[in-house]
Length: 396
Image (cartoon, rainbow, N blue to C red):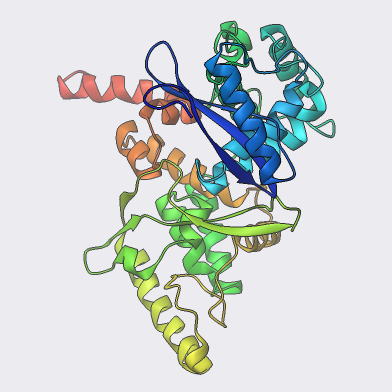
């Protein structure tokens, strides 16, 4: 096998199949990998690797992009290559996009021939039709576009195509995170939120601390159900968002599974709490201690704040189910659990809290995401800003 900066290789195993992987350095000195076709046995993969290294040493080895479809690349090469390279939740999202959208609609196109026109037409279709005739929100289209772009970038870096057409789409055709795409952002007024929380406190007291924390902090569902006591400082009146619980499709066909991970932005954040919410959490902590005592030594050791009577974690989907049922009982406009986050943000912005502060509180990666998502609230503040400035200068 060639030493130094020449080609080398290894056989990798993914989901019971063996892949020959050639490692080499491109013209810029960056290390690259080229994955060969899957083999059922390690011996066969080793032979394919030796043949590939020999061919590359003699300048005759080229990837078989001429006969490879985009679908085959995605399922046989790209997804297997990402195992242990990205977060499990990220890989699960990629796999769902591949299965539901990319293979059915783009999978038959040759990898080396897929172009910007194909992608623009594809995004147009899923915006209008989705999967079952229901239009997709622009944020959903943007996430699918991110999967497409990543896959085509990796194909390009592996030498399977010359360009990444996902990066060169016309501005109007390029999906963008944060654009509404005609989908209305749903949220409540402060009065409506008070009605809801009052109903929850009266009818589902065990769910009330969770619902209140979500509404008073704007935390994501997975962040709320994943909160641990070690992340709470009730004396100081703040919490740290460092752990999430997410429900995802099992890539192996086992239904839904729960994944413990980091916050969406990849970094934690501190969120200050109001005094009443701190008091509610203290009361809840005492209730949980009673539950634990009643159960004896069988209490789980996860340290989660929100649990069922038996100490089991509060499943993210269960939180949504409780929310939907309670919203319906109040007669308020329909609002998902995530809508509590939107409500928190819009109430803050409508009361002149700086966008940067709101963005930090929500855990957005950038202030631009906050502006793109809640820009509808900002125009209404322009008139207030004029009044404040005029009064500051002694105007009428």
